[in-house]
Image 1 (tube, one colour):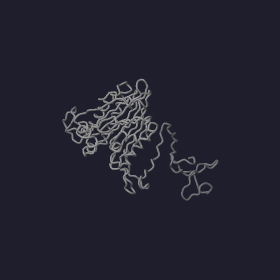
Image 2: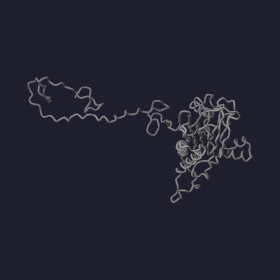
Image 3: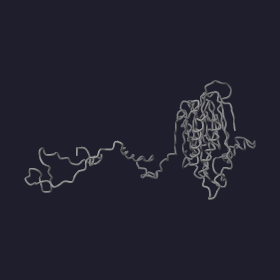
Length: 383
């Protein structure tokens, strides 16, 4: 066997001793008590087992990947992390994958963080870019907030975000009306969350099981920039804000909460300040889930007349920047050029404020190709 190769030609096996043949000599074998050739005490070698012919390596074979390095604890930086996610040295629970998530995809970016008080992140998001039939881009941002009082809220938000995003990516390139596509995306998200609920034996699969209390549930809010339009859609109390780049015009909130406080204000029973100071303020009146009484997706279309950024977020952020002017002050001035950085800054703003909830925000720059006057946006259609 040539020097430097292991047994049977496999790497990693210590090489066998190598003895050069005796020039012009016959094969020989050394047995205990013998000194080998020239000792005067040797005879014909014993029969040797036949060695198999070497087999050439299959060029199609993929070499095994080296083992992954042991993951170190983020707390003590010394202990190994066991399969359950705990440090073998100090016992510290390691951050889970969803505790902090970031994604940047061309002109849109999103960040989600567990916050400082919750034991898990129940928010989810999806961002994507596709093309309309004329080749112009369509940019999508979906944000979902799991209802903590329901079961498996983290699964609900993830299922809703994924389903809404997939439907938009399917329908927009076919030329669907963006506002109708947004509505259908919310319906698809609701169906995905409904499917997570366990139905009793014999229940009608077509019936919305309102009696399924505590079924998985979440809110949803989304924005689509397509063909010069800004489309928003939502169910629940997650929000969309518009912030102009030059800040010469006013920022605006483009959604209306499905919440107790919003109902009180809409009915003229309380001022906005009074309503949101009430302990019942954040009780939502609309959500996705098998125990929702009815599905009432809201959609609206706008035609901004100047460049700006769209902020799509859960209440984990807007609790610390509730007014549109507050949001405009919190987001960096160069948000259009650095959407991921801006999303990170906004999440940091919420964490600095206390981080009482999960925090998720998507930043979607919106550029117009024409100049106009008047307000920063014009309502095109609302349902």
